[in-house]
Each structure stands twice: as structure tokens, then as C-alpha cells.
Image (cartoon, rainbow, N blue to C red):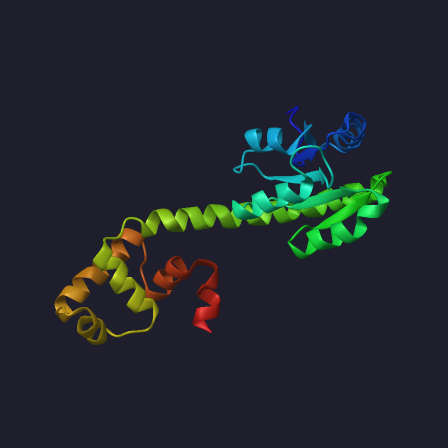
Length: 210
């Protein structure tokens, strides 16, 4: 039987050792993998964006604050779900963090049931975000196979342009457009135009199709 917790990883960032220990004890008791850090800087140095995880961070810390850490993660386009630890006077500040995408905030002392439900919600979101990230990376790798001209042709196919229109747009023959189109289909592993749209548009393919 595997000894690795199955529920996912929870990062805890707080400069108060007692808070870190309390959260680690509570969360490991619920079968989460917990990684604690005493500063935002040490967390950023060790954070692995490829991991399905969530973040619980104190809103006020020495050095980089929780707010600044959130801003840094937003800049890096990190999909990591965040919940803030707040004191009583920090609630207006915590509301502001939610406007920036934080999932919630929790006040000390922690309610165990509330914390568990919140972490489970965050990890569900993290799994969805991770799957989306993987799909986007796979899509980008496929599109990177195209030449500059093939990318121009694909852009026009996605826009609904006909071969003759594409030929006129790019100043090339219809036969050349057809050759590029065949190469694009082969490189992207698409059998139909619908397949092509799904790859080119990713999560927006359904909206485009409608």
C-alpha cells in the first residue's frame, strides 16, 4: 500500500511557527501532503508549478507579505488556488484579495471542518487548472511545429476563410494553400476541420463553433 497521501499537496506559508505546526497537524491528519514555509521568499524558491496543490498563506508577514506573494503568482500566471489566513482586523484586506482571485480567507483560530472543506475545494480547482494547463502545453507544442506561413494559413482557416480567399490574402496560389492545409492537418494530427478548430482554439473551440 502506498504511503503517499492521496488527497494532494497543501503549501502553508506563515512566519509564525505555531500556526504552521497547527495547520500541518490538522491537514496531515486529513491525509494531505503538507509543505510548510516560514516566508514567501522561501516558498517561491521551492514552489513547483507542475504539482497539483493549493496555498494557505498569512496575509501579514515579515519580508514579502501574503498580498505581495499573491501579486507575484498572478504575474507568473500561476493557477495555484489561494486561501489567506487573517487576523480580525484584516478582513477588509482579505476581501480585496478575493477580488484578485483568492478563493477565501480563514480567521484564527481555525475551524477544522471549515478548513478541510476549503482545502478540498481548492484542490478540486487545482486539478481542473492543472488539466487545463497540460492541455494548453500540449496544444502549444503542436502549434510550434508549424512554419510561419502555415500559421498564417491556419489563422485564416480558423477565421472561416475559403481556400481562394486565403490565397488572395497571402498572395499565393490555391494549390499552395491546399498544400499548406494538408501539412497543417498532418502536423496537428487533425482529420477534419472540426479537429483543427479544437486544437487551434483550445477551450474556446466550443464558443467559436456556436
